[in-house]
Length: 240
Ligand code: PEP
Picture 1 (cartoon, helix red, strand yellow):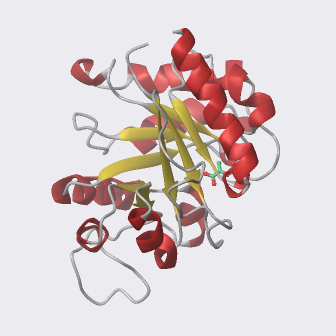
Picture 2 (cartoon, rainbow, N blue to C red; picture 1 turned 135 degrees about the vertical axis):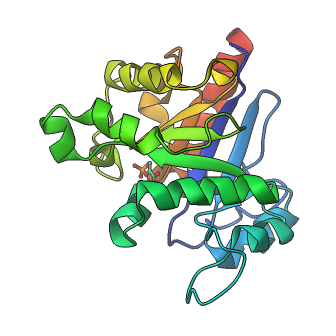
């Protein structure tokens, strides 16, 4: 496989794990695997200083203005971030981010030179009604798919619940996502899986042909578990 695996840790509203923002922590890229973290805004600087690939959990599309509590893409970039999450399901739910707003975020990130990881995925009710494919199509419709972006498929029912999608369920949606990319981006675009990924299920998920890494919440706060997932990814990359 030509795509390098990306293992990304979303620390959400949690402090950096002890010792994480250091040069010797497990949160660093390895020979064949890119590793990135998404800390709170307060821990960005320390992670960047430790040489860790670091991104914001959100960035506002506008450069500045009356947006209390927000931070702009340009500010993230100017402070040393290289990536940003766009449209995580918790942001879509708690902050009412629409597909259109998420697309604006991704475009604004690209404009300032940040790499966007755009999160998409259906809710439990949408899967129960077999609507997951329509949801994915709608969520992708306005995205700048002809640019260098990463997509994270995160079924909402699997996030933080311990209910991981089966490798087959995940692969089915990842293949759909890839089929919706413009031809020139089909092979190069990374598509991550997110939703209760942990050491015990990482291998079977990462073995799927269209799964190019993981966006990991809970397990990314446990350095040992996160390190195990990175080691699994590194081994799979070496075997390929
Ligand atoms: C996430 O927050 O993006 C996520 C996938 O969380 P968890 O791994 O805890 O399900």
